[in-house]
Length: 445
Image 1 (cartoon, one colour):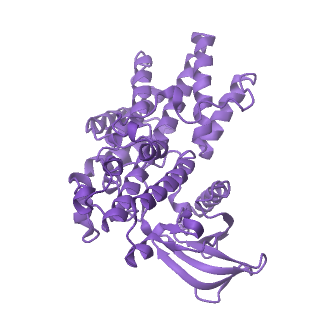
Image 2: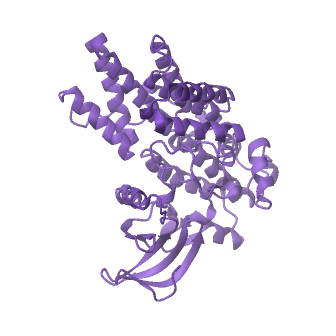
Image 3: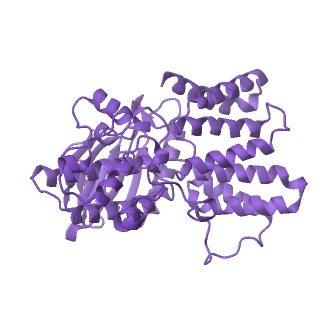
C-alpha cells in the first residue's frame, strides 16, 4: 500500500510501519506542518464501483464523529483525508509513546491485582465514554491497549470501519466477522448484533489473561476458540491463579457470561462492581428507564418551550448523527408530552416511543428495549397487520429476541418478511431487504 518515505498530500511523511490490521496499516509519520510525530492509519476497501460517493460520504461523517472525542484514554484525532482516485483513505491520530499489553505480557511481567483493577477501571472509563455515542470497539485486546506514561491506559484502533452507526448492527468485512477470536463475544462469533456488552465480554477476556497469563479459551485454532466462546465455561480464574480476590474473579466471570443480559449492563456498572464489593452479588440488570444515561440533564437549557416539530426533528437529527445518549431523553420527553396532548397526537407519540426503544437498544439496554417495543405493539394492535410502523417495531423485536438468545426471533422475522412481500409496496423496498438479510443470517446461524 505505502512504503517508507512516502508523503501523503505533501504533508505526512511516513517513517515506519507500526502495525498491520484487517482494515489497513498504521504508520509512524512526521507532520511537516505541525513539526511533530503522528500516527497515520490507512483505511482500505473504500473503492466500491457501485457506491463510491456514498462510501466516501460515510467515511467523512465517521471521521467527523471521531473528531469530537476528547478523552485521555483515546488518541486525539487530528485529520482525515480521502484519495477518491486510488480508493484509499487515512486517519491521522496522536502518536502515543508506550508499550501495549501484549508486549508487557511477553516480557514476563506478572500483573498484580491492583494493577489489573487500575487498568480495568481506566478501560471502563473509556468504554463508558464511547458507548454513550454509541461506538462499539469490537476488537478490544491486549495489542490494542497501550500503557503510556505513568501507567495511563490508552485504547487504540477505534478505526472508522468499526464505528457503530445507528442501524448497522451486524458488522462484517468482506463476509468475515471482524475481531480477534481469543477476545470475541459469543454474539460476535455468531455474527449477531454487537452492543456495549460485547465490549465488556472482551474486556473480561483481557483481564482474565492479565491475571492468568492466557486468554479464557486460548488463541490457537480459531474455529475451536469460537465454539468455546459460544458453549463452554472458562476455567475459574482462581484455578489458574490461586489466591486471587474472589471479588475480582466474580466480576471477570460475570463479564464472561454467554448471554449478554447476564453481563454487567454498562461499563460504569462493571467498574462499580470492581470498586464496590458490597454490590458484587447484586442482580446484573440494566438500570430502570428513568435512570438510563442521558435522561437527567438538569444543567441543559429547557427544550419544552420549542415547538413539538422542532423538538422531534432535533431528536431525529441526534439519532441519525449517532448521538444516541442525547436523542434518548428527547424522545422520552416528547413521547410523554405528546401523549398528554390527546388522541390526535398518538401517531407522533408512538414514533417517539419507537425512537426511544431504538436508543435503548443501541446503548445496550436490550431487555428494556424489548419491553418498550412489546408494549408498543400492544398499543398498535388495532392497526392493519401490514402497517409500516407496526412492521418496523416487530422487525426490531425479532432482532432483539435473537440478540437475547431467543429463537422465536426467527419466527417474528419470517412473519414480518411475509407480510412485507405480500404488500409489495415500493416504499417498503429498503426495510424488506433489511428484514430479508436479517432472516437469512438468523437461519444460517
